[in-house]
Length: 240
Image 1 (cartoon, rainbow, N blue to C red):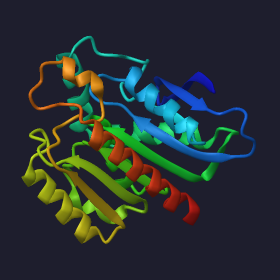
Image 2 (cartoon, rainbow, N blue to C red):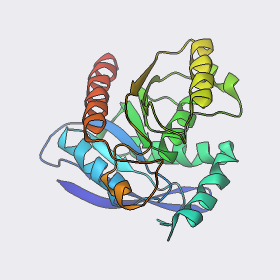
Image 3 (cartoon, rainbow, N blue to C red):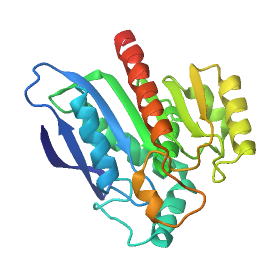
């Protein structure tokens, strides 16, 4: 497997992503963005990029904070995160810059692009879809679902898959209900999977050591949601 740091830019801001692909496979391959959680581009999104590469995709774990910045703690991370959540236009520009960088890679079939995201990254890929980006599909894992402009969902061209913990207190039922209403009114192709007995951050084993009662790894839901993503990709890339 080939991995490398890829620098791309959004305006004057330098971003440093992590690219993974199987260099032994010939021909152009679908490209998948991986958007990180509050802690920035650390080991978990890089691990997911490598897992996607093992499936035959070219995966780019993206850098939403710029300069490869990794917060020293959750307080610093929340400051960076909320700066972007409160400026969705800036958030969209940054994720679009990553999508453009991935599409330009010689290994990538630019007609077959998708994006997945975790927690904050889930919000990132949903905003990419709401912007009307030309991607085949987006997948949110335990992501934030709120939108300051629900009418933007009418711009969605991508198919949308959301994998959510039914007991997630960070993304509670009213936010889920508002998102489902948004999707219904948009007319886009969407699917929402709710995993029982499952809290926030259910895909990341590292959260069990953080003493956060709202977040807990759930191996069963992790495996089921990854399988759902794989089936989703099989469908959208075949259609593309």
